[in-house]
Every structure is written in structure tokens, then in C-alpha cells.
Amino acid sequence: MKTSTKQEKRYRRQKRVRAKIFGTKEKPRLCVFRSNKHISAQLIDDKKGYTLVVASDLEIKKPKIQDKKTVLEKDNKEDKRSGKVALAYQVGRLIAEKADKKKITKVVFDRGGYKYHGRV
Image (tube, rainbow, N blue to C red; front, side, top):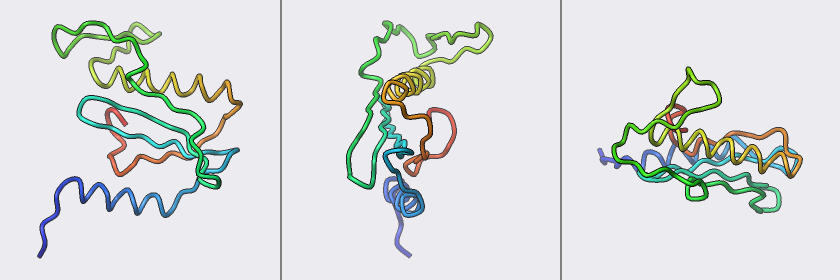
């Protein structure tokens, strides 16, 4: 039996998900990419092969982090997120604002082979 790496397994899951979903101009595919340090999301029209909107944590002004537990607060004071999860939340808000400007209200979510948990 051939052993698979984590990346190969994620790629197989990604292909399986991608075969089932399809984005159009009215309802584009929200594709999420996550690395160890960064996260990005884009809205893609699969019919034409165009990327409509892009958002990344590189666009967000990050506070200087002395330790990994620096808290970035949300609008609600009770709900606090820290570190990478907070940046992923801000990327989600940023891509939503950009999509609203282009009059996009519905999307098809493509988790990209990642678990729908935490940063995704």
C-alpha cells in the first residue's frame, strides 16, 4: 500500500469537492487557501475562468504581535478571537465588503480540501 502525504490527501479531497461545485458570475465559487502563515480567499467565475474578488491577510494591517495570543476584538466584546483565527475572520469580512461593492450576494463555498473548522 502506498503511503500518502498530508498534501496529497488534501489534493485528493480538493479534487473531489471541486468536481461537485461550480461557480458562475451570479453565484461565484468562494475558494479558500490556507498556509501556515497566511490565509486568502477569492471569488471565481468558473464559466469564464476569471477571478472576480480577492482578499488576503496581507492586505490587513496587523498589530505587532509579541506573543501568539494577542486578541483582535470583533464588534461584539464577548466574542474574542486570537491570532490566525482573528485574521481569517477579518479576511472574511474584507471579501464580503468587496463582494457587496460588486453586487455579489450569494456564493458557492469551496473549502479547498481543508476541514471546515477553525480558520476555514
